[in-house]
Amino acid sequence: MQEKNYSKITLSRASKIYRLLWALVWCLLIRPLPRTLGQCWIHFVYRLFGATIGKKVLLYPSAFVYDPRNLVMKDYSEIGPKADIYNVDLIVLEEYSIISQRVYLCTASHDINNSDFHLVTQPITICSRAWVAADAFVGMGVIIGEGAVVGARASVFKNVDSWTVVGGNPAKVIKKREMMDVTNK
View 1 (cartoon, rainbow, N blue to C red):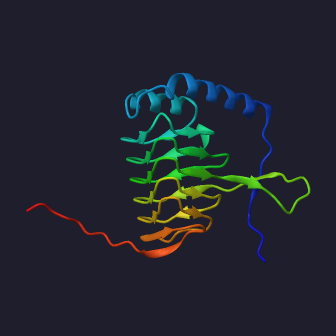
View 2: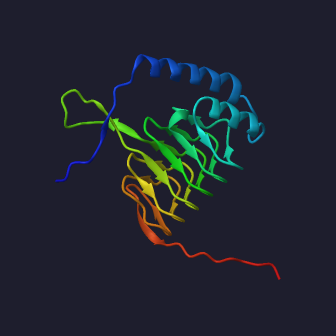
View 3: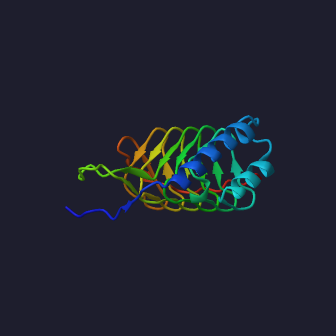
């Protein structure tokens, strides 16, 4: 069996203070905002805490990001309501990617083969034009390929090929995604 390439993490006191300050700021200055109002303010605060935010990004105020320093949202990407972004490691949302409501992105776990059960991490990448649907789970080290769709309530532990639709627990390929542009005539 091949061993995965994990990053072992030790959380410093400074990191813990930063996260406490971030949680307070999120609770007081972002979370109370209604739905999609105040995007300029939300982007400003996230950038202030180290996030990389592109243009025309939609970041719902009820979405919780564990560590803004480990968040990259490229142009036109979206994180929906009540999404839980547990980004102990880097999470990258490429252009036009969508994270729907109540999605859980998880970049960390514990090494079950080590007696000290230390924290291990791997980044997550959601490629351009991919969609992670409602209430799905995406585990550490996963890359959701370009144009891929992760179905509602799916649990993804392995990479998803581009232009593929997956669903279930664990997620399995359902079909290839075919784009049909509809024009009004």
